[in-house]
Each structure stands twice: as structure tokens, then as C-alpha cells.
Image (cartoon, rainbow, N blue to C red; front, side):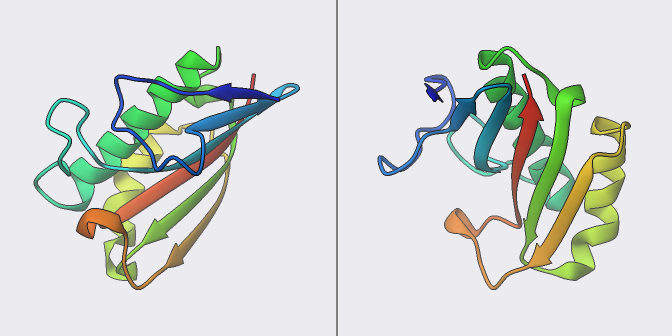
Length: 123
């Protein structure tokens, strides 16, 4: 196993890694729509937060020598299932290969985020 950490992204809690590479698989921890420059949630709601979370995932995947187009599984956590259509608009553009996906509604996320996304990719 190889730990993947990307210093330019917002730091994660010390109890876990941003990603772990195990053989040909890369498991990326959940990412919020936090802008690395400001360390704040991207303003403007679900669209910008979804885009930023995916950008953060792409940065971590690049550090692991893979990319969004190699993502096989996506888990999405939303604080309001009513946000699903707007989230799916952004998702469809960034993941045109249609990886397996699970989306669940949860009570709340850190920082008051609307979405958190985690992925498993092939290296």
C-alpha cells in the first residue's frame, strides 16, 4: 500500500490519508467542494461545490498517476436529495464514461458542505 497526500489541497484530518494506492487501485477519501486557495467552500451552491470536489479528486488522482477517466466507482453524499438533478448535470460532464455510482442523502457534512464525493480508480 502507498499513501497519497497532496500538500496543495486543504489538509485532511490526521487520522486518514487523502488516498491509498493498493496494487492497481486508488481509493480516494471523500472530498468537499473546498477551494484550495481560500480553504473555504466554493460559493454558489451545489454546482460550484460539485465542480470543486471533482477538481480536488482529479488533483489527488493525478498525484497517484491516474485520472478521472479511470474512475470505476463513485460514492456521493448529499445533504438534500433535491440537489441531485443539479449535481448530476455537473457529474455527467466530468464523468462521461458513466462509472458505477451510489448517491445517499445524509444529515450534514463538515463545514456545512452540500456534497462530499469519494472514488475508486484504476491506476
